[in-house]
Length: 196
Image (cartoon, rainbow, N blue to C red; front, side, top):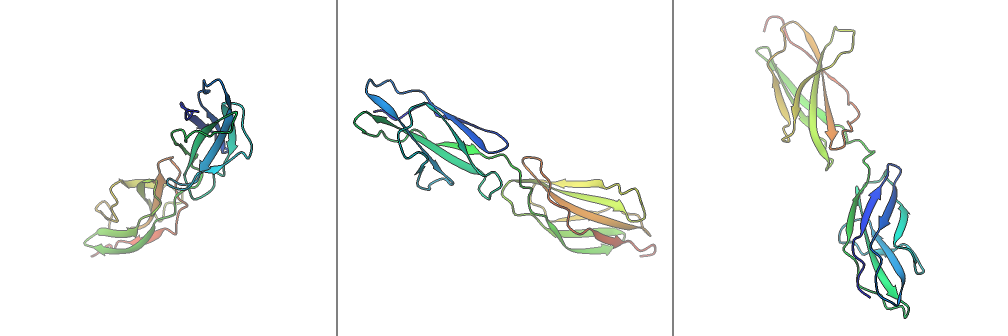
């Protein structure tokens, strides 16, 4: 038989994948076999050990794992158990439930009222931005103000708006393409001398 065509997939937040494809039109079509792989280029493994008779299938994948995608393909079988080639492989992106790892400050320097900060970025592949926040150390309201958003892999920043004589807390977070933010690491506390 011809390889199945029109393979489509949807996935929900709990990891249930629904596959569907166009039914083969051969007179002697018996059914299908469904295959899955965890990474591109990996050998596809069968999900059913017998013939599957419908042209839709439900699978369940673990969403809290390190691989962010899963791959599916389908083959057709005729009544003599001749198997077609694979359909086109479809890539399914898992819902992102794991926040990125936290970036950490690697150093700072105060010079002429300017605060020069350096940090080590989060190395997760889906990081969209690093966000630098600041709060006045004596402010008991706990309000953190966004100082700058970095999308270009920057690992340093000079704060020119710091006021002499004040102490600030700085915090750096990573935000991924799904909007998840890393857990905040230990804030960095910096005091700007009143008289440089």
